[in-house]
Length: 123
Image 1 (cartoon, helix red, strand yellow):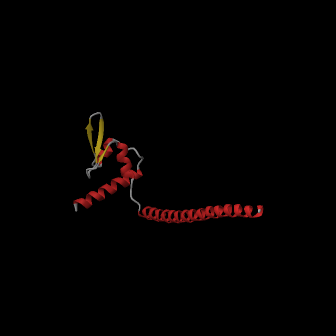
Image 2 (spheres, rainbow, N blue to C red):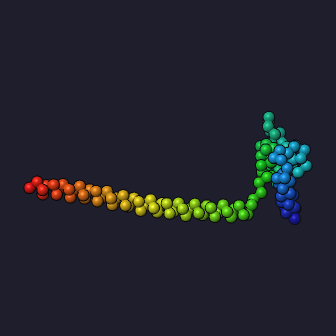
Image 3 (cartoon, helix red, strand yellow):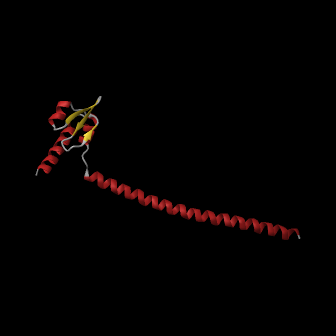
């Protein structure tokens, strides 16, 4: 129950952060359960879940990220389309290579045929 309550609170905080501007004050972060930790000259932030951030900007970015199911599906669809297109492209490269080899072979054959024909014409 505590874990799901923590996840719900975290989702609420992310939604609040998404509605607010990208910058949050230290007091607002403290109110959301984030704690600041001094590390030498810098200040790090620790989330209620234990995740550590180097700056307030990283905290704001992480809170504004909400995974979108539709976006994931669309991304998977586009990645699949790219994969299929690459496969077709590679297959066409193989066919092109074979055709180039055949053309080169026919050119050599033609050169030899032309040389034989010129010798026959000279005699």
